[in-house]
Length: 367
Ligand code: NAD
Image (cartoon, rainbow, N blue to C red; front, top):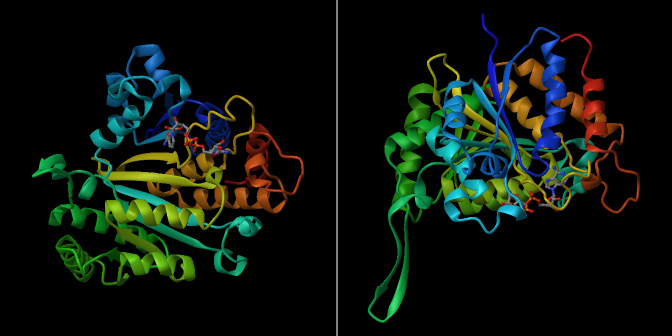
C-alpha cells in the first residue's frame, strides 16, 4: 500500500509559520506507522512572486492528484495593489472552483479551558461540538442573472438564488455522512416559508434522508430561527446543513461562539475520487495576519486542527484525529496560551513554535 499523499501550500504571512508546526505533527505520525507522501508548493503572494500568478498550473494539477491539500493562508499588504485577476485570493478561489469543493465544513468546538473566552455564558458553550456544512459552489453568489443595470431613472442590483436538485442532493449526502460519523443528528436550514429554492431544498434533503439515511435523525428549521437557536442553546445541534448564503452567516456566527480566530479549522470537500476519498482542501479560517507575521506570535492550533480534520475526513483516521484534538485540549488545560488567547490577563504568552512543541509532547507515546 502506498502512503496517502498530502500537498502542503503554506502561502503567505503567518501561513508558513503555522504550517511548520503542522509539519512537526505529520513527522510525529510518520515515525509511528502513519506516513504521508508530503509535497510542498507555493500559493497566493508567494506563488505570484515566483511565477507571476497566485497558483501555477503545475500546482493546480498536483492539487487534483493528491489525497488532500492543506493550506496555510494567503494575502498581505504587498499584494493589495495587484490587479484582481492575480491577487493572492484568486489562487485559493481557483483551487476551490477547479476541485469543485461544494461542501464547506466549519466545526464550532469549545475547549473547556477557553470557555471564558466566548461572548456567551460559560455553560452555554462549554463542551460545545457542532458542525456547520455550508454549500459552497452554487446559490446566490453564483446564480444568473446578476449585475447592476439601469431601469427607468434608477439602478437596480440583482442576484439570483438558484439551486438544482443535484446540487442540494450532493451537499445533503455529505452532511448525512458526517452526522453518521458523529452524533447521528442533522438539522437542515433554509427559508422555505418565503423562498421557492428553500422549498426545493427542504424536499430534496428530506427525500435523501428518507431513502438512504433513515438512521440519521433529520429536522428542519428556518435559517433565521436557526440563528436565534445557535446563540440561545447551540448544544442542541450536531450537524447543520445549509445553503451558501445562510451558511456564510451561520458558520461565522457559530465559530465566534467559541472564541479566537486562531482556533478555527475548516475543510472543503468535493466528490469522491477513484480511491473513494473526497477531493479535499483543509485550511484554518484565519487569514495571513500581516500584523503579527514573522514574529512567532501566531497561534498554530487552527492549522493543526485542520490537519486533524484531514485525518478524520480524508484518511479515515478518526482515532488519530481524536488523539491530536486531545493533545490540543491538554495543552490548553495546562494553561499554555499564544498571545491571541491571553485576553487581559497579562500572563506570558508562548510562541508559535513553543505551542507546536507542547502539542507534540502531549501526543501519546503509542499511536
Ligand atoms: P486575518 O485573519 O489575517 O487577521 C485578523 C486578526 O486576527 C489579526 O489581528 C490577526 O493578527 C489575528 N489572527 C489571525 N490569525 C491568527 C492566528 N493564527 N494567531 C493569532 N492571531 C491571529 O484577517 P485580515 O487581517 O482581515 O486579513 C489579512 C490578510 O489575509 C488579507 O490579505 C486577507 O485578504 C487575507 N485573508 C486570507 C484568508 C485565507 O487565506 N483563507 C482568509 C481571510 C483573510
